[in-house]
Image 1 (cartoon, rainbow, N blue to C red):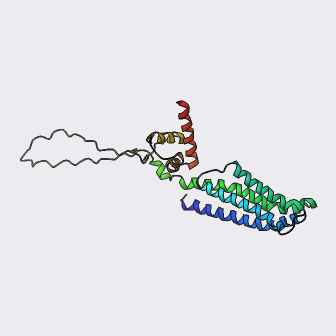
Image 2 (tube, rainbow, N blue to C red):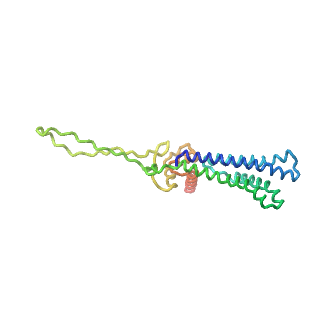
Image 3 (cartoon, rainbow, N blue to C red):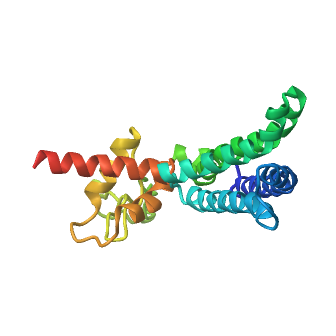
Length: 250
């Protein structure tokens, strides 16, 4: 898939998520205000309850979007914030409907916040899949991923002397092998990779870097992900496992 298509899909996903979040915020404002007023909260404080929860949820969605674009997953606190805000929005929306015992009102007030919570949970996973499609190598490149060898064309023989002036007999020809073009490992990193599992390819790349290389594991994972054909987080996980194995073997 072309690199521009996943990026357009990611932008469409962000736009849809923010549109749903804005509509749910507007829908919840009146419901939450009614619930707050019915339980002793006066204006204007009753109008502030829904925006407080909605803004916290918007912050969590924005942070998750930024992390997922760089191949990172949010930690447990971020997940807890999203779920707390979502459950709080749902509870405030259905409180009066649940007290009245009307099943139709409970369902109608439950659908918008539940859709928002599920979409906020699914969006980071969609973005990671889109990023994997963007960084994956094309099939034509995978077929020629091995080391390349230059082909040397044979040099045509010089024409001999005329038949009436025979010259000295020609000696045996000696084939001179030409230089082969292979991958060169310098300080800038590898040029080509041989086949094998993802862990073996990452291990081969680690073996080629010098001991005084100033790049961090995160920088190495970002540079190697297109070469290996996996996501940045997958390369970083293999790097961390190799580092731990190296420390254990010492």
